[in-house]
Length: 319
Ligand SMILES: Nc1ncnc2c1ncn2[C@@H]1O[C@H](COP(=O)(O)OP(=O)(O)O)[C@@H](O)[C@H]1O
Ligand SMILES: [Mg+2]
Image: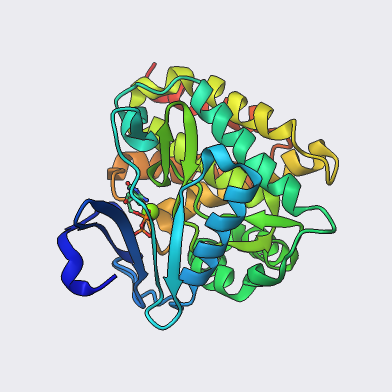
């Protein structure tokens, strides 16, 4: 396509890591995404632009595993670190984050997300899966392990050895294809099916990361919007149950125990790490900091155990 064919460019917002836009060229509409070398966050945080290749490979792999949950891809430039994909829109399309915050998400959504992530993990755990495009553990370290866990370990001496232990275990593990940013802001629902976008952190890695990362967002949103707390346990359970059905590569209880230890670490990271969530006020940050420190020092081995601790904390907050 010639540049002169482009009739409109509309930048999309919501992320910190890329230049992304809806592009019209005559009667064709695309979404074009380029990786930025420096992320738009307060701390100085650089990230390798070749992560754009990891994202494209993840989108293509996910499309093979779960075609009904896929965005169409239309080619990628290695020189420009950018690619073109289908622009997903229409009446049946909505961003999970928006629906969650408006109280419009029922437990079918977390169940669908858990099931999809699990299918991708399970397919990628098989011996015939081509892991070559996803040998990205050093990028994953730069984008996730360092800013979330190692940086936070430097701020909290009392849990620093636990955070460093988790960091090392995430770095060393190479069991499944990890997406690395399974957040409601990166998931569109189209006619009830989740489409996971924004796979810049994709790597062969530890399955607990995607599960805990997504649960972390559900918890943080419930901290922020107290009306979401009543359904948190149901939504968390829906996600985990659907995911757990797919776990074929290891005993599910062991994986659940690792999710239960990682989740408080990620909670703390979103308060005191390099990329704190923008929407929590100081009071909420204090609540999350206290409960996550408590859970890191006295770990739970089940996800229900972690959620119960949160619900107890909130009960004490609002007697
Ligand atoms: N293919 C697409 N079709 C429609 N909207 C999209 C598409 N890709 C991304 N978006 C929207 O743009 C936002 C930012 O895209 P994302 O890939 O998450 O970029 P970033 O890395 O900057 O977070 C998403 O939250 C989503 O709302
Ligand atoms: Mg995003």
